[in-house]
Length: 351
Image (cartoon, rainbow, N blue to C red; front, side):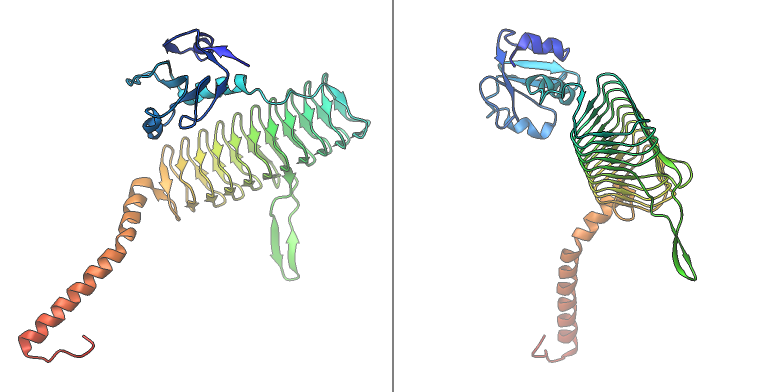
């Protein structure tokens, strides 16, 4: 697809500084962009490429003061980039509504209008599928589960029994929703399983990455609120409550009964202990280990996680330890030599 810069400015609600008739056919990274391509400046670190990029035009912040042959000033270059990329590279078309012959659908299941049921999909008893839902190949939807309007379930997803999924949810390949939580109790005879009798509630506009595991609750539900985005390979344990519009990056794990309030950001490889509360708007830096509650609005780092500024100072001190050790050795040597000289002590061979 192709768009003029004038059309692009309208799509992103931007202000064009340049030629509206220039035609754009592709989008590229700023350091690699060439003729006919548009790029974006969403991070100041990439400003160094302004002098070498061959892009036809650049999406820049409203307050950008630099010069280039064609600029489109926008409120949020990253969002504008996403809008244009979706039009220039729309991706594969959605499958046409229909049911593939190899699908297995229980008699008591309810299917909405214009649904697509792919090859080898299994839909169990009392399942409810909303209008426009897409179920790709080899997925399983368990007993008495519900999937809302327009949701897309990618290949090889397993949805256990009693799971409720809202509207416009996307669940990527290999995810497992509603598996048993890690609930066990030690007894004199060994280890006994605690029944996991709750469910999972996933609200509207949630996206769940490939190979995630979201466990069902023990009594109540594990809950993922509206608009939250979860990266690949994330583990969410039983009874966890995640608020609206949170970000969870890959390889993170949240232990049972933890609560994340709205707008929390969890970076990669973060571990959060059970029964904790992470306040609204908290940012947890990568590879942090969270062992206590975090107040709303905090930014934390490290293991155990603590205030970012304090943790950064401590890390700086740790990095300086080798230099301090060398300086101490030199100071010890000078002190010893001074003492020996003052007291007429002969220097040892290994000094």
